[in-house]
Image (cartoon, rainbow, N blue to C red):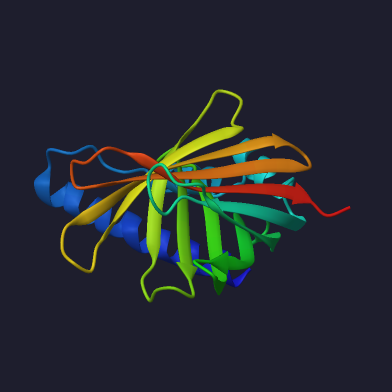
Length: 199
């Protein structure tokens, strides 16, 4: 309820500002506040992508493979993931625990589908950094293969680009793969997580 009030208050401010700007310029069409409010309310409602996210709520076991060097076998580890929906079914929240480079590793992710931009968005934080990693992208026609891209700065300079492929196989299985490239270098797969729902 509080979120709705804040959202509507913010929207009213935006609409009033828009109307003022339109009047000043006189070259823009006047905004119908009621129509704009209805549009925003519609965009705020969870849709089919959010229903698919909701189907992933629950506890999972994970098997992780990490490729640290080309041509060498991956390091493997097991872990857990707990997922739940936030804010009345709008966002998928994940708590992930495993091993990374031989050390305990914890991460938190929030996945969203933005009805306005029609894009999937992920925000990720973990115990190996102090930044927030963001990716966005699109899905296949059935919504079950989501491909996102993002990048982050590297300690020695430059940026590393990422491509993630998240496949929702069925109600009890999903996979997450990460590919990366340094600068204009060749992309390589460096991470694969297989999720199996706890029975």
